[in-house]
Length: 503
Image (cartoon, rainbow, N blue to C red; front, top):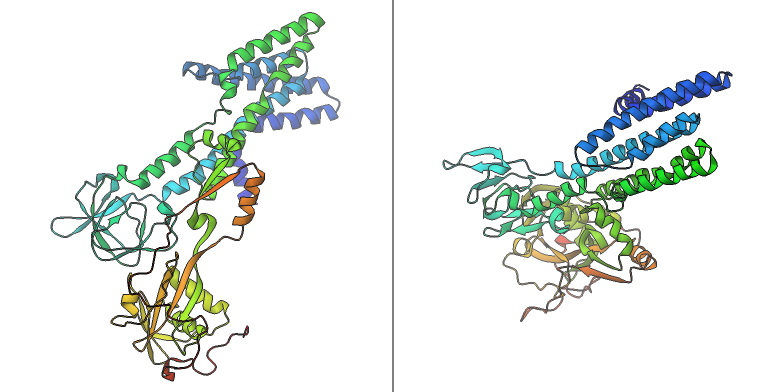
């Protein structure tokens, strides 16, 4: 109850004209029901004239700043209806004008808050490494080309630069849409706006903060906040001729009929409240909704152009796909069941917060597998994780980490997948492939676009399928391998540990 009252008071302070008009209508209606029509007329008329004075002051201020709109027509319509005694029509015009302004302001505020949420994540300061090796926090705008920067674990990179110390695992999804973490080694480029992984790294700035790609994205967001669609500004562009023509028609109607009420009626009809209210609110609501979904509309004019779109180009990752990795194939070594390989990997990966670790753990649980306890977990950034599972040393990660010094073959398929290598007690145990799967609603979305006359759809992706490397061995193994030459039983599943109701 208190929260509702607080919101009501905030609304009243922000939109006093709307509250005044509503209260006037309630009071006037109460007087009419009580049989006091004359007092009701005076109450409503005086309130409406007060609103007209307020609108006149605002119109004069706009004229002084070099802008003009259709306020004059609304003001004349309020005065005319009050003059001829149509005080309820006068009140309706006041409500439409004041309510329309309040709706536009409210919608603009919501859109601004949604877009500002995207801006709030921008880096404001960075850790600059001084000549004596100390780290000082400075505003990102003070960073100069050549400065050495420390990027802490989980921190957003503030400027474009080159990685100098350490391997970095970066989340670049806000820039490229790529959902999988990207490994960067010393000498490679780091982009502002990417988020560092679990290890602190050092980089050297190669560009000013204002020149980074991320800042250009933020500039687009700021432009979207202040833009107006061409249709929204239509009323302002035709305000002067529209007002002159409306007044001329209203005067002609009065002259022909001899009734001043006709003059007021024409002005009431001519007041373009739907154009004043509906168009800005629709565009602001559309921009706000898009911002909540992570869609940045460059300007409102672009939003208006969507009705004429006939070709649509989609990014793949996170747009047509889910944006999160999922297990797509399992290649165990001979004698190792696919479920055993998944269980081993997930038992170790449950100790990590890496996105791939989360996907492997979820896949194992989805198969109905029981995970074993892992001890002595040791995670190597950008490489993998090692732990002891039921007394066996299990390594999960890149080939160089898990299969160091081993010559076991791996799959040759060059599809856009991420491979996780698993070893148990120093022996290669298998390969698990993960990929970003197509979103369930993607097909229906493309079909709906075709119904909206978008006849051509394209997909933009950097994925490719290359030929196998020379001399590379064949596939590691089948999904469900034969058991002709089983390895020692020490890495097989302990009794009762693996359960899969589906088999």
